[in-house]
Length: 167
Image (cartoon, rainbow, N blue to C red; front, top):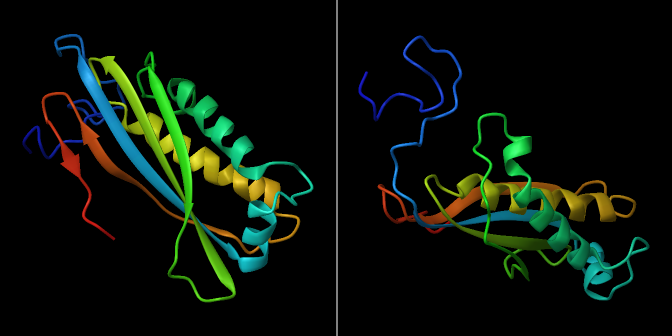
């Protein structure tokens, strides 16, 4: 098995390990991720209209995503704690669902100058923001579905830039 085929968080014996990044260069690294939350159209109307009983859903979800990204190293066991320099969480609504459904698109971006990538921070931000939307709206829509949490882009480091195919 080549190094490219081996999972980076397993040693030669197959035991879990934190990746040694001590020899890597410090570079500017950026990652973007996305999550989608499928819900009833009536739930979207409550979110957009500010009618949620728990308050401003998108503001709370944004803050939760930012807070979670800053704590990724505590949440993911083998993830390096990073001094994240910027985290952004943005929201938009998809136009493709049937009339009785809505899809909230959560886009996150994390930036750091470090020896290792910031993909997990971007993914954590999008994931926790989507979970927060669910938590704040579950009283009116328990059938919401969090779907398609994925990395959409990363740059920096030895492997350079990568972009996901459009979906």
